[in-house]
Length: 213
Image (cartoon, rainbow, N blue to C red; front, side, top):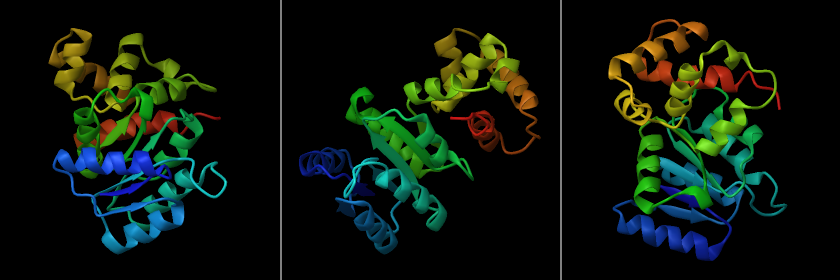
Protein backbone atom coordinates (compact mmCIF):
# COMPACT_ATOMS: atom_id res chain seq x y z
CA UNK A 1 0.00 0.00 0.00
CA UNK A 2 0.85 3.70 -0.19
CA UNK A 3 -0.03 6.00 2.71
CA UNK A 4 -0.70 9.73 2.22
CA UNK A 5 -0.83 11.67 5.50
CA UNK A 6 0.68 15.10 6.18
CA UNK A 7 1.20 14.46 9.92
CA UNK A 8 4.61 12.82 10.25
CA UNK A 9 3.80 11.26 13.62
CA UNK A 10 0.52 9.79 12.44
CA UNK A 11 2.03 8.65 9.15
CA UNK A 12 4.93 6.85 10.83
CA UNK A 13 2.60 5.38 13.44
CA UNK A 14 0.37 3.96 10.70
CA UNK A 15 3.38 2.44 8.94
CA UNK A 16 4.53 0.73 12.14
CA UNK A 17 1.07 -0.56 13.06
CA UNK A 18 0.18 -1.81 9.59
CA UNK A 19 3.57 -3.41 9.02
CA UNK A 20 3.18 -5.30 12.28
CA UNK A 21 -0.13 -6.63 10.92
CA UNK A 22 1.51 -8.06 7.81
CA UNK A 23 0.82 -5.18 5.43
CA UNK A 24 3.52 -4.01 3.04
CA UNK A 25 3.90 -0.22 2.91
CA UNK A 26 5.60 0.58 -0.39
CA UNK A 27 5.80 4.35 0.08
CA UNK A 28 4.46 7.27 2.09
CA UNK A 29 3.51 10.79 1.00
CA UNK A 30 3.06 14.09 2.77
CA UNK A 31 1.00 15.81 0.08
CA UNK A 32 -1.19 15.04 -2.92
CA UNK A 33 1.55 15.36 -5.53
CA UNK A 34 3.77 12.92 -3.67
CA UNK A 35 0.82 10.54 -3.42
CA UNK A 36 0.11 10.61 -7.15
CA UNK A 37 3.79 10.06 -7.94
CA UNK A 38 4.10 7.18 -5.46
CA UNK A 39 1.04 5.39 -6.83
CA UNK A 40 2.24 5.82 -10.40
CA UNK A 41 5.62 4.36 -9.45
CA UNK A 42 4.53 1.45 -7.24
CA UNK A 43 0.93 0.71 -8.37
CA UNK A 44 -0.11 -0.61 -4.94
CA UNK A 45 -3.16 -2.69 -4.10
CA UNK A 46 -4.58 0.21 -2.10
CA UNK A 47 -3.80 3.82 -1.23
CA UNK A 48 -4.72 5.34 2.15
CA UNK A 49 -5.46 9.03 1.69
CA UNK A 50 -6.09 11.88 4.13
CA UNK A 51 -8.51 14.54 2.90
CA UNK A 52 -6.94 17.80 4.02
CA UNK A 53 -3.34 18.04 2.86
CA UNK A 54 -0.81 20.77 1.93
CA UNK A 55 -0.71 23.40 0.67
CA UNK A 56 -4.21 24.69 1.52
CA UNK A 57 -5.37 21.85 3.78
CA UNK A 58 -8.85 21.91 2.24
CA UNK A 59 -9.68 19.10 -0.22
CA UNK A 60 -6.34 18.25 -1.88
CA UNK A 61 -6.55 14.68 -0.64
CA UNK A 62 -10.04 13.97 -1.93
CA UNK A 63 -9.21 15.50 -5.31
CA UNK A 64 -6.13 13.27 -5.50
CA UNK A 65 -8.23 10.26 -4.50
CA UNK A 66 -10.75 10.98 -7.27
CA UNK A 67 -7.91 11.33 -9.77
CA UNK A 68 -6.43 8.00 -8.64
CA UNK A 69 -9.76 6.29 -9.29
CA UNK A 70 -9.67 7.65 -12.83
CA UNK A 71 -5.97 7.16 -13.61
CA UNK A 72 -5.45 3.90 -11.70
CA UNK A 73 -8.81 2.08 -11.45
CA UNK A 74 -6.98 -1.09 -10.41
CA UNK A 75 -5.81 0.61 -7.19
CA UNK A 76 -8.18 0.63 -4.23
CA UNK A 77 -8.61 4.02 -2.53
CA UNK A 78 -9.41 4.34 1.17
CA UNK A 79 -9.97 7.88 2.42
CA UNK A 80 -9.06 8.10 6.11
CA UNK A 81 -10.15 11.40 7.61
CA UNK A 82 -11.37 13.11 10.76
CA UNK A 83 -13.95 15.00 8.69
CA UNK A 84 -17.35 13.46 7.88
CA UNK A 85 -18.22 15.18 4.61
CA UNK A 86 -20.92 13.40 2.56
CA UNK A 87 -20.22 15.56 -0.48
CA UNK A 88 -16.63 14.30 -0.53
CA UNK A 89 -17.84 10.72 -0.22
CA UNK A 90 -20.22 11.29 -3.14
CA UNK A 91 -17.33 12.53 -5.30
CA UNK A 92 -15.32 9.48 -4.36
CA UNK A 93 -18.17 7.11 -5.24
CA UNK A 94 -18.78 8.53 -8.72
CA UNK A 95 -18.19 6.12 -11.56
CA UNK A 96 -17.58 2.42 -10.90
CA UNK A 97 -18.52 1.76 -7.26
CA UNK A 98 -15.76 -0.65 -6.31
CA UNK A 99 -12.43 -0.59 -4.51
CA UNK A 100 -13.27 2.48 -2.46
CA UNK A 101 -13.67 3.41 1.19
CA UNK A 102 -14.18 6.38 3.51
CA UNK A 103 -13.46 5.88 7.22
CA UNK A 104 -13.32 8.35 10.09
CA UNK A 105 -10.14 8.31 12.15
CA UNK A 106 -11.75 8.71 15.56
CA UNK A 107 -14.29 5.94 14.89
CA UNK A 108 -11.92 3.12 13.95
CA UNK A 109 -12.18 0.76 16.91
CA UNK A 110 -9.05 -1.31 16.30
CA UNK A 111 -6.12 -1.85 13.97
CA UNK A 112 -7.62 -5.23 13.03
CA UNK A 113 -10.84 -3.52 11.87
CA UNK A 114 -8.85 -1.02 9.82
CA UNK A 115 -6.76 -3.76 8.18
CA UNK A 116 -9.93 -5.71 7.36
CA UNK A 117 -11.36 -2.60 5.66
CA UNK A 118 -8.10 -2.10 3.75
CA UNK A 119 -8.18 -5.67 2.48
CA UNK A 120 -11.83 -5.33 1.47
CA UNK A 121 -11.11 -2.18 -0.55
CA UNK A 122 -7.97 -3.71 -2.09
CA UNK A 123 -10.11 -6.67 -3.20
CA UNK A 124 -12.59 -4.38 -4.95
CA UNK A 125 -15.12 -3.97 -2.15
CA UNK A 126 -16.50 -0.92 -0.37
CA UNK A 127 -15.89 0.25 3.21
CA UNK A 128 -17.94 3.23 4.40
CA UNK A 129 -18.12 4.51 7.96
CA UNK A 130 -21.69 4.25 9.31
CA UNK A 131 -21.63 7.99 10.09
CA UNK A 132 -20.86 8.78 6.44
CA UNK A 133 -23.65 6.46 5.29
CA UNK A 134 -26.10 8.03 7.73
CA UNK A 135 -25.33 11.58 6.61
CA UNK A 136 -25.63 10.67 2.96
CA UNK A 137 -28.90 8.83 3.46
CA UNK A 138 -30.43 11.76 5.32
CA UNK A 139 -29.51 14.60 2.97
CA UNK A 140 -31.66 16.29 0.34
CA UNK A 141 -34.58 14.78 -1.62
CA UNK A 142 -34.75 11.09 -0.78
CA UNK A 143 -35.80 8.46 -3.28
CA UNK A 144 -34.83 6.03 -0.53
CA UNK A 145 -38.23 6.81 0.99
CA UNK A 146 -39.57 4.17 -1.41
CA UNK A 147 -37.94 1.58 0.84
CA UNK A 148 -39.48 0.10 3.95
CA UNK A 149 -37.75 0.64 7.27
CA UNK A 150 -36.34 -2.90 7.20
CA UNK A 151 -35.12 -2.52 3.61
CA UNK A 152 -33.36 0.67 4.62
CA UNK A 153 -31.71 -1.12 7.55
CA UNK A 154 -30.47 -3.80 5.17
CA UNK A 155 -29.21 -1.20 2.67
CA UNK A 156 -27.40 0.71 5.43
CA UNK A 157 -25.56 -2.44 6.52
CA UNK A 158 -24.83 -3.38 2.92
CA UNK A 159 -23.20 0.03 2.50
CA UNK A 160 -20.97 -0.74 5.47
CA UNK A 161 -19.77 -3.90 3.74
CA UNK A 162 -21.61 -6.54 5.76
CA UNK A 163 -22.41 -9.92 4.20
CA UNK A 164 -25.95 -11.31 4.15
CA UNK A 165 -25.13 -13.58 7.08
CA UNK A 166 -23.69 -10.69 9.07
CA UNK A 167 -26.75 -8.55 8.33
CA UNK A 168 -29.02 -11.39 9.42
CA UNK A 169 -27.20 -11.63 12.75
CA UNK A 170 -27.20 -7.89 13.37
CA UNK A 171 -30.91 -7.53 12.57
CA UNK A 172 -31.89 -10.85 14.16
CA UNK A 173 -33.61 -12.13 11.03
CA UNK A 174 -33.00 -15.13 8.77
CA UNK A 175 -30.57 -15.23 5.86
CA UNK A 176 -33.56 -15.78 3.59
CA UNK A 177 -35.23 -12.64 4.91
CA UNK A 178 -32.09 -10.62 4.15
CA UNK A 179 -32.05 -11.99 0.59
CA UNK A 180 -35.71 -11.04 0.18
CA UNK A 181 -35.17 -7.48 1.45
CA UNK A 182 -32.05 -7.08 -0.72
CA UNK A 183 -33.97 -8.27 -3.80
CA UNK A 184 -36.67 -5.68 -3.06
CA UNK A 185 -34.02 -2.94 -2.78
CA UNK A 186 -32.56 -4.00 -6.14
CA UNK A 187 -35.99 -3.90 -7.74
CA UNK A 188 -36.88 -0.48 -6.34
CA UNK A 189 -33.57 0.91 -7.63
CA UNK A 190 -34.21 -0.69 -11.05
CA UNK A 191 -31.06 -2.80 -10.92
CA UNK A 192 -31.19 -5.62 -13.44
CA UNK A 193 -29.98 -9.09 -12.38
CA UNK A 194 -26.19 -9.26 -12.61
CA UNK A 195 -23.24 -10.29 -10.47
CA UNK A 196 -24.63 -10.37 -6.91
CA UNK A 197 -21.74 -8.56 -5.20
CA UNK A 198 -21.62 -5.85 -7.86
CA UNK A 199 -25.36 -5.32 -7.61
CA UNK A 200 -25.10 -4.95 -3.82
CA UNK A 201 -22.65 -2.09 -4.23
CA UNK A 202 -24.66 -0.48 -7.03
CA UNK A 203 -27.78 -0.61 -4.87
CA UNK A 204 -26.03 1.65 -2.38
CA UNK A 205 -24.47 3.97 -4.93
CA UNK A 206 -27.68 4.24 -6.98
CA UNK A 207 -29.20 6.17 -4.12
CA UNK A 208 -26.11 8.04 -2.92
CA UNK A 209 -25.42 9.54 -6.34
CA UNK A 210 -28.97 10.91 -6.55
CA UNK A 211 -28.66 12.90 -3.33
CA UNK A 212 -28.14 16.63 -3.80
CA UNK A 213 -25.74 18.37 -1.43
